[in-house]
Image 1 (cartoon, one colour):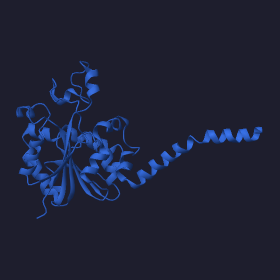
Image 2 (image 1 turned 30 degrees about the horizontal axis):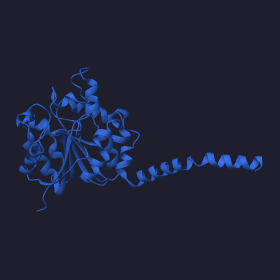
Image 3 (image 1 turned 180 degrees about the horizontal axis):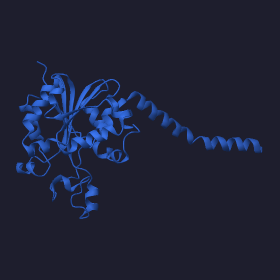
Length: 270
């Protein structure tokens, strides 16, 4: 084999490993083009600290389970720091409607500031203070109501019945209520639900059904079997709160964020 042929063969060999990588990038781009949730999750406007938590919150699988699509009218109750807003706002911006139903209090002004910092992405988010402005969301107009790790706060405050009724009223017949929250094992003392941040699946099902919802099903996508739900400061012992600060920090980081139930309910079609 002459030198020219050997050089050509060597260059061919060097190029071969690049082909699968190029194909992977092409597949990834094609997936984002055909999957709007994946594209929203990949939005450059998302902050790195929030992207790092995808491993615990599984936004793609969670939103797919709840049936969220880009053309829906969606309400997120208590978006607070805006973790899911970073995904839902770009997902719904062009063809849907996104309401942020934020309880009045210390998070409301901060949430508005968060939106104002990036108007190119968040200019179409409709903020409604709860409960004062809940009526600004027309009754029977919403496809999906979502609430992530908030029902335990309602239970501790005693506001769960009124809040779930508000969800029910704003949803269309056949509309979806999607709930994610920290899971307390069914055999634990129910009194822990008032202090630990954990709730039983049966408790949320009871609250939803009392408001008129039908139970559709559950996903284990946000489950974490390492979480035993019996920590010194409740769920806030675990990341991201790490309420114990440096005490056993490595232990809690190794466990990760809490074990979570992911429950889907439906407003009946009359």
